[in-house]
Length: 262
Image (tube, rainbow, N blue to C red):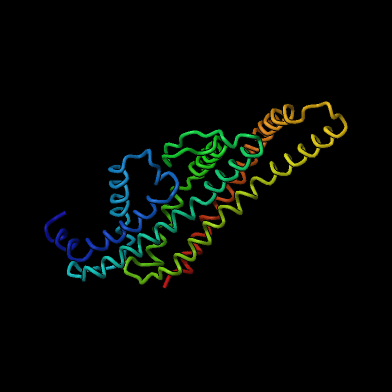
């Protein structure tokens, strides 16, 4: 890069690169894989700055170096929140899977079985962590991270880095998407809920027919054993469903960008 090209970049594209970095930083804050706490912070910072530089050919915005600082701050905040929304939408299926696994664990009697999650830096339910890892594997196998980056490049065309972004609309969309986690988690967990309800009903009938039987001593290991077999049988089905849901949300993210575009 010669001096004239460098001077042109600093005059017209440097601030646009920073604004693009703010949008990618939002994705690195909330998106699956990108936001993993196991990745050192320095690596993530280098990652989103590098992706922003690679995205420069798709940026048609010209932001002069003498632009007001307040305008740059406002634009940066809007781009960061937009990136957080995109990452959150991409993560919905994974967190719904974790919530469904937690429901499974409660039904099986594993409510107190906790393991340390290195990504979230906190204790999480055992089956919830297994379900989350399964959904993460499906996300990577479907190249969800590449589809998310493709959607990011599309967002630069639909919503320029200097476009006014309605923060209220972003917050409303964020609330709607987070609410989907619980509805999807319950839908994933309904087979186990129904099955365990049937097991409890059978145990209740047996306790009435055979009063001498200690239902508590038999019921807990029976539910655990039945739940393990059912969970093992549903892993393949869940993987297919996770894939469909992940693709659905990423495709819906493209439509959402079209709605938010000015």
